[in-house]
Image 1 (cartoon, rainbow, N blue to C red):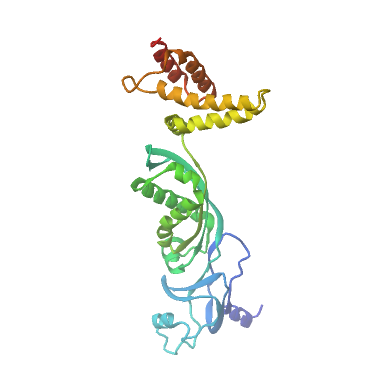
Image 2: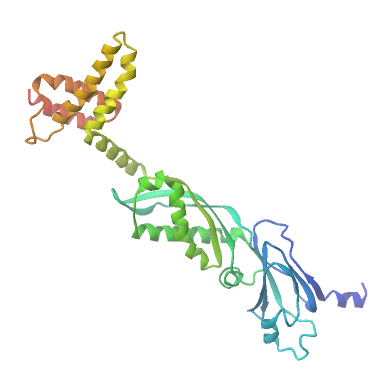
Length: 329
């Protein structure tokens, strides 16, 4: 290599970056011992943004397109440099590219349970996980707060920070809002959109846009889950009219299989209604109304035992009600 070839290599005429590797958020063009030629071409692709940095200060910013670098296209850098020859000579500056592609399938999850204020059960602990995607929309903020002058900054370097940001924002939101676990579990898509709105400002402070946010699973500790199961059973027992209708409906296919045909169907319907009336008397607090007739006591015990076998009543509840009924005989 001759001396002229060596000198020629010190000046850059074309600046570009081909994103051949996934997961790179920012990339610094190698500039050691090199200067950018006046009139050099800068290529910024559709999925990129470019930033010029002079002595640690952000000078100029370029969006997608083919740019010719002159005093007209680099006004801030020209002002910082104060070239006497109107930018007729090569100049030294750092050039950083930023990928604006959407970084998809990023994972988040609660390593430890977070507290929510449930509208029915009060403060409860829950775990959740899902995925999200984001992209760089303001490279100046991202450069100043995140990537800095690193030659390459990758998505994995940001993973822990973003997960911590999500969990911190969610904990703050749940701590000050009254929500329902049942609503969250039943309408995860709707709740995901609501949480995306809550999280967006936290991402914006780093020059990022939260493109998507999805809750894939919400779970409760076992003891809390048992509470909700119990509450569901209590609500079902509280509406004896609906329970009687349910019992009658359940008896229809059973009666249809009996030789009695229509007569069996009538018995099933009567049993359902009768059970509702009998349970209404059995679960009435002492002094709150007439108790169950003595002649129905044993039939009611049989029905309650059936509820025990189905898991609607606990053994403790069954024993307590049985003792109460037998004491009336």
